Amino acid sequence: MEEVLKVVIIGSGPAGLTAAIYCARGNLEPVVITGRTPGGQLMITTDVDDFPGFSDGIQGPELMDKMIAQAKRLGTKLIYEDVSSVNLKSHPFIIKTETSELKTRSIIIATGASAKWLGLPSEQKFLGKGVSACAVCDGAFFKGKVIAVVGGGDTAMREAQHLSKFGSRVLVIHRRGEFRAQAALQEAVKSKANIKFLMNHTVEEVLGESKVTGLKVRNVQTGEVSEIQSDALFVAIGHQPSTEFLKGELELDDRGYVVVKDETRTSVEGVFVAGDAADQKYRQAVTAAGTGCKAAFDVEEYLEEIKLPTDGTPY
Image (cartoon, rainbow, N blue to C red):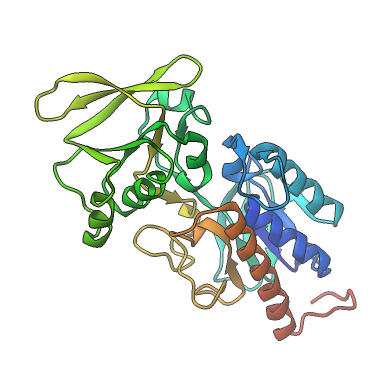
């Protein structure tokens, strides 16, 4: 008889691996489909100072390596491939990867979301060296420095507000003449004495040698290009959830985030979500891990509800 798994976790960031650890400890024999690059967004993060348990901080890739090792030690099976499609109308569910087809009674979606970038080669060059998409993660590294934020929506306003606690000056750069952020957020940012604004401008290049020292900006109305001093660039133009493969199978909102019905439950019974694939607000490793834990408990409860055999017999 073809094997039907108890739970498959799609994604291998903090949410997916925490879910795997808890599922493994619950004897659910989890399988994690990691994607071709295991570890999620923390694999491109250098210093991590905000994940509990590391008094001297830890490098992002090292943290994920430790989580992967822990999940494997507890019995998690990892498949280092991408998911090509899912059939959530089938019972059991069907997941197709690049080389295999899995059947499972439950799924945890933990595919995360990635920051939208400006698309500049120099931007990628300085990732972790002054360029970031997370003020909460990296703002404290720039105490007393000049910090630039690109964006005009709610995310940009929140990032600027947080960064104003650290930077001697925070410059918000926006390509339009007015912000699209909600009025209350705009007012909160405009009340900060150390936050300034550069409207109708785009960032053309990030300047520096081994770290960010400035930006080349263009006035979209006149075409004039100039250089400004900045020790950091925070890109705050939104995030894109990694949920394209779920369209037509699971309820997503207009931005592509998984719609949550109750804690971690989704529109399809037996399918759960954890981490940034549903979280549009916090987007932190520790909050993702927390929802991974909750999803694992919810899966265990669900499998008990459907009276999954526990004696090893097929079902």
